Structures are given as structure tokens and as C-alpha cells.
Length: 264
Image (cartoon, rainbow, N blue to C red):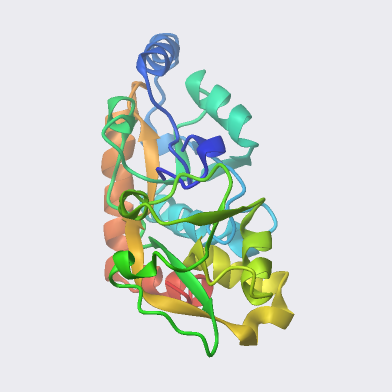
């Protein structure tokens, strides 16, 4: 993802970029044994980004479940490791993983990563408001007099940044929603899936008091991205695309989205 979290510097997150990474990936590939893609388990890495990915989520989160189903449809087993972001990046740079689950596409990332078709998930970043206090959010220029909660260190949508709205910073999404419910801010900028997850798990008592505002400020497709620098990378890219096409045509993709991403 160009993820919203700069600390991910991908996410969900701008996952990987730069000449140093490209060099590292190519060097690792040069020393790697070429294994026939039809007879190997693909090695994937993800970080905690609920509800999209997470070690304790049902089926590993919706992005993980879709990725696993696509690989299975293409005849591959999938080995998945959850890592803190810094470690995930380091291991990917060293050639230990074939790809990363839950990534945003960016021109910089295309230097080192291949992007198959997206996962059918859209990160919708927009506003939550208090029930009974609706705001028209299609024109950001009309929000200049409001108190808007954002999270310190997050990379917000370009459209939001261009509007130059006054913001109040929170430590994380959880605290941002709490501030909204308490009336300390008028709107909270957040990913819709993240908001849904928090209101279902940690903030259940606040769920009746908060509502999502349409339209979203930004909508970004979510991908499983693959390394470009490994000998079997082109075959894996083709296989994953075929797997995604299969689960889309047989209804499995829609079923996974219905069960695991009802907010989408």
C-alpha cells in the first residue's frame, strides 16, 4: 500500500523502494536456486494491518485469505510470515520472500516489485462523524471551520493535504475515534476498514454514536506485490494473475469479501 503509515514506508504502506533495494534484490536473485514454480511453496510476508492482515485475525485477514486462495487456485502452497515492518523490509531486501501482502502501487515501488491484478479490496480513506452531527464532505473546502482529527506520522491522501485543513493530531486511530466520540474533534480521518474493525473489537460501546461519511476522500486498490528480482518471478506473476482470475470467476473472491470485508 502506499500505506497511510509512514512507519510502514509501505501498507499498507509504501513497502519498498529505491536503488539500494533494487541492487539488494538483484544480488539475492543471482545467488538463488531456481525452483520450478509449479513445485514450490511461495514465501510471503505481511505486517499487522487489521482488518486486512493480522496473525490473530480469522484466516489472517481478508487480504491474506484472498492471496492464499489465489495461490491455491494456481497450484501453489503459501508460506506466510508476519513481521514487524522494519524486519519485513529487511528480509524482503535480502530475498527471503517472494512478495508482500497488502500493498499500494506507486511508481517508485514498480522499480523493484511486480503488481498483479488487485485483490478486489479498496482502501477507502475518509471521515467518521458523530451520529446526529452530519457534515457534507464532498467539497473539502467547506470543512475549514471544523476540527479534523488525524494521526501523527500518517501519510494522508494528497487531496486532503492540498486542502490545507486545520488538524488535531492523535496518537493512533483508536484515540482519534475516541476524541471524535467525546466531541473533541468534528471529524476523524481514517481508513473505513480500520474504523469498522476498531468499532467491532475495541470500541463497541462507541459504535452506535459514530458513522461513516460518504464520499471517501481517497480510494486506493490493495495488492499482493511480488519481487521482480528473483529468477522465478515472471512465472509467479503469471500464476498469481491466473489464480485471481479463477477465484473471481468461480465466486470464491466474492464469498471471501462478503465474509471478511463487509465494510468494503
